[in-house]
Length: 427
Ligand code: GUN
Ligand code: ZN
Image (cartoon, rainbow, N blue to C red; front, side):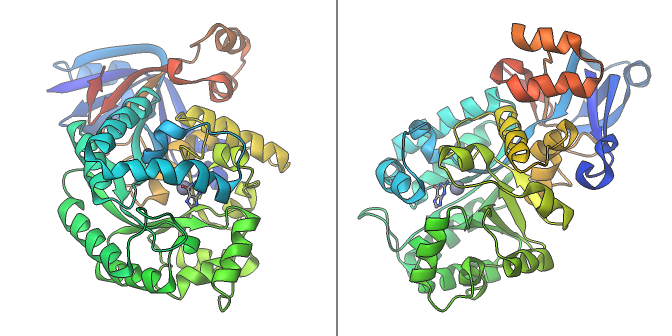
């Protein structure tokens, strides 16, 4: 069974930060032929319709046909505490996050939030997320079961924390290793699911725990490893006090075997020159979480500088430290942060970051994040005139990027007209 999805199709020829905005192309009369969950052909609508006369045609008119959004850093267990007022990182964790994460010892609660989380992200056009779970193995099961039921490509891992967290929310070096290993063996590579080794961050792990988790990663080098790095200056001072022998924050991971090509570091705002050069040398990924970085008051990520030096960067909501489930809103925040740094990002580069850039940061760029033959058919149709405010601005636009930029800055879930997961429309 073939489906021909028609609209203004977005494809990528390269990285727009490196190759310029022309690397992102829009075919105003394009189409994507989907067969068995994958992209079988991409090209002009008339030609594909002729070449695949049996295909069912779904015509999205002037809507943009884009890869589904890829959210490279989220905390699905924080869904219910998004938009919690008035705290900076450490107080925010203690006041809002840890009490909520405690509730995930109840598998029924974990399942309920996982279902709610995927309903929210899919309605926002996000087809893949890389999430932190909680310390509870049940929270990983709940996430993967909900993702599997929806045929999603999805990633998560059990959070490891053995200090500076409340009773009921701490594991040990050994139990973190054992539980992570068991979950990894159960879920990693099952269908479209990937297990991610997940020490929360240096303040909540002893060096012994970081070391054991590093050992686990060494035994399973095909897994990604995710953690947080240099998000707030107070946090960095705390890391220095907890790890007095470390050269810098990254070193607390590096010395325990938690630095490598498949490492994903969330935030990475206040980096030293040594950290930047080590990250580049090993080819690790950094994830920009702009709504979170402004909401929690963390700082301004150096997108232009980091991309110019060749770092691998993804984009993420970081819900619920981030204040939105929408990757459109997240692109807008990335633009605003760029403006505050006197380095505005072109909408082509913002859109690329939210799709191919995040997929590449997660080492999934050969499967998702782009409309290309052979890729998994996770796609969205985006209405570029979804509200009266956007429609009137869009009508004034002289170029397609001017039109798209109105949706980047003002769009939300109302712009997402259709979502295809492995080629199938979801309602
Ligand atoms: N650092 C450690 N844990 C967290 C978290 O849950 N959210 C954010 N934004 N930063 C963190
Ligand atoms: Zn985070």
